[in-house]
Length: 615
Image (cartoon, rainbow, N blue to C red; front, side, top):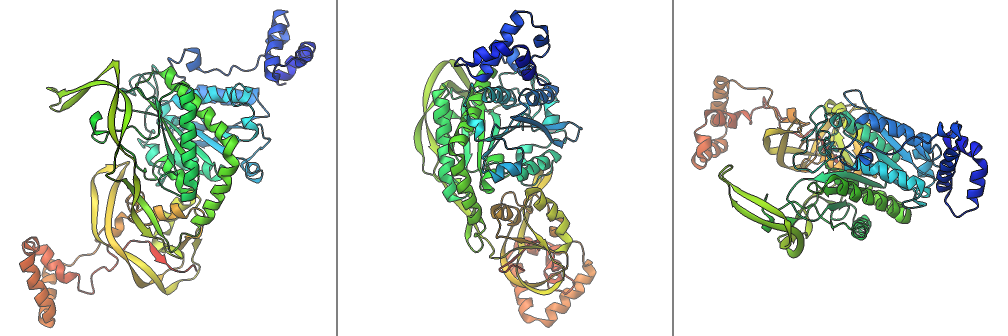
């Protein structure tokens, strides 16, 4: 039997009396419980509501709990508020731990389908994507308890569905010890930045390598949150500002939805300012590392990051960064205030957000044939801002040999520094009118990623031997020297050109006419920073697989020179103009091999084609 029911039966008379007062129902219950205990009601004492405080709260926010606490609290919140909270698993980590989700609402919605049918705004609050930056877990449980008992944002959960993921990077959370965050003040011990596979989940939203990210994308596809809040702690310099908000769409994404992104940022800053914080509307990273005088530069993150990814889905994303040099109690307080503000804003404006998001979905489906930005940068235009810092010195270091900055936290001072926040699109592509084709040989590789994101595609049932397409052949292919997130990064240059090619049965067609068109472009345009090409998913397309022996190439070259005077003249001119070419026997023979029928015409051909028509 639920503890609240037991208490009501044992202390029914007390509750009926207190019910005539102006106390809220849960406050009345608390008083009834206290009075019943005072008069020795043993059955009541055995039926106390499960304890919903955290290790962090009980330690004065000097410590944070292990993941078993998340499992217990998830269960106990659902027991304490059975009509308002559900505890679910939304995935399993590589080390076998459950990924916990709390679904909280007093709207009566019992599922994602319910929320969609009733047009309820869904807010996803995510903690611990970097598990050393764990403010979001402890602040989230505190905010959730207060939202449920009505002491914060009373009535907001009647209008909103709150999804709370206390820890996204669960295995990293359990790599638990002191000094996992050497640039951070508290808690005493915490988790690790990356997963058990050494993957940084906040670089994985597009490529979706990690099982944890695949689980998160399934959750996003199922619930379609209108607002996604990713809770972090930033490293960096020492200064007085305690929290920053990076919101998209503001500079990127759907232009009409940007208005709501700017309002979300402004309202969040106003709420935190009223609560005593010093919030910032940009990520406080110096233009020149470790040099405060260089100032700051705003920008648009690529969609491998949470807030940018969600914006490409035509929803609102906010990256919340408390400042690592503030102590843990202060950071948790600021994060708690942010969560409450976001839920309040969703209750007040969520219907407007949903309406504009649906219109943005329709506009995205019309992007075919238009010029779409895929890269942004701040212009040289800067404005001077007053920034709350500390006195500092910059002197040469006899340890590192470079300049070292030393801050004096006993001497606050205002820095007047430049901020470049005039952010403009810098790279464009023209979206195909119809969509993209993936030839059958690459279909399964690409289909898995499309499915992870919820992108629609179809398979070609019957081969098309002569399709009018656009193809992209790389003129240059540059591979990164070091791997990044386990991948060799690729930069390819070239141009789309009209060509007729065969499409085997089993090839995929990805239409541009769908709500997630921006994600389609991000994945399949080779110039996009998080495209499949950029992440090296098409690496073998740029590897030469067949060769001509030098003695064979020598004979081929002589035949071509004798048969084609124009080719002979071009070869001789190249020898004069290009010293590196002239000095390389292999390059000279390759000049002729590329003109022979044996040459692989698919080398450097991107296995993504564009079409002006839908099949």
